[in-house]
Image (tube, rainbow, N blue to C red; front, side):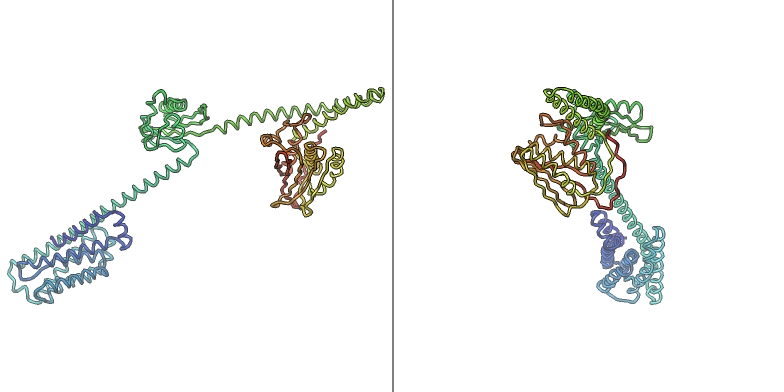
Length: 568
């Protein structure tokens, strides 16, 4: 019993006391617990043979053959060959006399081939089948050994007590063999269960960590509390908000905070509103949502109860909040923009109607001028110039206010500029200024409305000339940069202060004494309708450059053919 039991003890000690990682490495390399079983049964065989030295009978009987047989069943014939060689070696070292029968019986020579053949079936069978296979092999081997002893006529020299002893040893072999199989299976089963529990625990920890990272990545404030109001989990966004009431709050000590037991300095507007939502959710057993308008932000809060089983035991609440401050601001700005759009439409309609009586007034002024003395011509001219100026302001306002759909066709920007050069030179000569034009001759054609592009160029050119003194130079150039058509209009004026650059294109913003503030707004509107943009580069004391950048358009691009609404 001690012989076979030692194998179970060694196997159990190694497996149970080894770390899970070590056992897992063994299982991966050796396809199971084969190395541990090999060592355990080898030690058992050695112990069995050493015990035969103290045998009180003439025939040395070792239960190491049982260890050999069970070991081969578990580790297979190839690895079991090591146990067989060890058993034969121990036989030659320990036995005083060597007989064929002893060699067949005690070394396991009879059991090894049969156990090796049965090993594959044994390893994939249930515990019940494994026990049956082990018992059949032990009984069969024992009976065959008795037959061999009878053939050698060695049993005739023994008395009945010796035969009884041999029977008891065989019965012990059957018992310890069965015990060995059951004990090994229990150890393996416990280790497998332990390993499964460890894997399940690691999986739970991994999923918990994934959930924590997901909570932190989510652009929302997420907090869970138990039924007593103590915080059980919180993400980074919610922790930032909580620190407004608890400046020293940390994730490690967050469970010490109870929302239902807040002191007066900690009862901030946000926490008080959240607690009220929790109480309503507790009473209604349903989700509660509310927008909390705080001093520092606008939060959309949602509180949901958590149940052990639906409708039975309340275990806590989950609080989800979202900062909607920007959304609320955008909604307010959108409402303001809609109001401005309505006012703009009304103003455009009014200014359109104003032009008709202004045209009548100008016509009668011209008629009165012809019939009045020449001394009054100067006054008539002032009135008509102011009427023309007012009409020009109305035209700019209408161009800016009306969101018109224009007809475009592929055109050459250099050609448009050359057509305007005589007009710009005439204006520059009156001011004592000069104009220089540098054209990029391989400039691609772009989709444009020539009338609007001319208006854009003239507005930018006149702004540049008005900013310079009587010896200034206006520089106009075209270029192709990264596949985009670029037109630059540069002046040598005093430049624009940096704090005014952001306001240049705002309607009605102007630095001129008689300006309307609509010219640059109109230029930006024209550029955007042509899928372009305007970039301003200004250095105080040196001048300003307006760069109009257009997307390149192929000549076979589909022309926009929607008709333009009549301004008049």
